[in-house]
Length: 126
Image 1 (cartoon, rainbow, N blue to C red):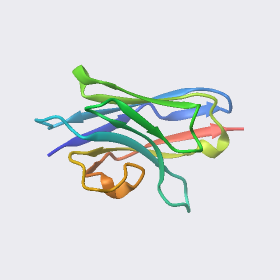
Image 2: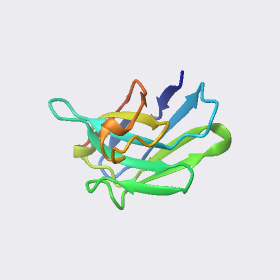
Image 3: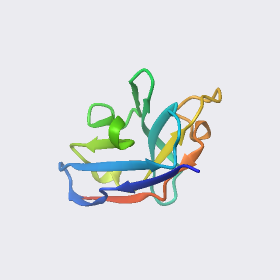
């Protein structure tokens, strides 16, 4: 059973930066992709970024493109999300997710993922 644990959330002023990490454990084989989603109160879960493990491709949601960067650390089974130029509208709970195999669903869709972390709160003050 894969377990995902997020860390790095917190409170930051607008224009600041935060770095989120997601550590995966319990995996015995290479994965297909890992991603980040976020959800603010009263809204649907929103795609933030994804990393396809085997080819190193990255994907971003339109609202974070150019400000956020997703990357991986193979040795540590970790994926990170560097968030720069943060805005109050980035405030949300951020979730890490893992897709073990491609199931035909686009990585921008939560249905592509098999495992989810508990989430970490990011709050951006104006």
